[in-house]
Each structure stands twice: as C-alpha cells, then as structure tokens.
Image (cartoon, rainbow, N blue to C red; front, top):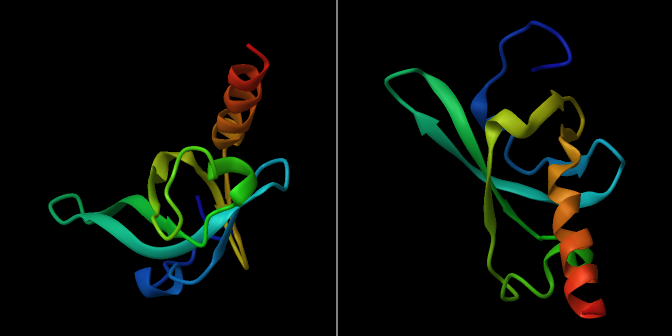
Amino acid sequence: MHADATPQEITTLVGREVYSNNGVFVGEVEDVRLDLDAQAVTGLALSQLSEELFASRIEPGKGVMIPYRWVRAVGDVILINDTIERLKDETAEEQQV
C-alpha cells in the first residue's frame, strides 16, 4: 500500500491530506484505527472534511472513518479509491429527484 516497501510509523499518517484517485480532496487524517491482534491499521479517522463531498451528510465539525482497504497509496498525501466520490454523485441525484 505504501509508495515504497519501507515500514512507516503510524503517527506519520496523522495530519496527511487524503485525496481520491481522481484528485478530489476528501479530508485530513486525524487518527487511525488499529487491529492490535493483527498489528495493522484498519481505518483512518478524517476531519477537515471536503464540504463538496460531505456538506449534506455530516454535521460541521464532525469527522468520518474510512476503511484502510480503500487506501491505494501513501506518500506526501494519501490516495484512496474513488469510492468516496460516489457520495457526491448520490447527493446530486437526490437533489434532481
């Protein structure tokens, strides 16, 4: 999942910006969820959320948890599947109905 195979400290994820594969800003990592038995990260808690994606779904000041399996790459920023962008598409469809 990482850009290189070098192990990284979990704390280096905190504060990184998260974008979809298509370059859409999603939010910023505030915390991580761990599976201590498996010694693995299982989720990312995001804050500073994109208003474009979450305005009609999440109260201001709240965050979201995304599954770590969505992460495609970790570097200066974190790239995730474009699954998150479907929220924007669903919201647009609801408003058109």
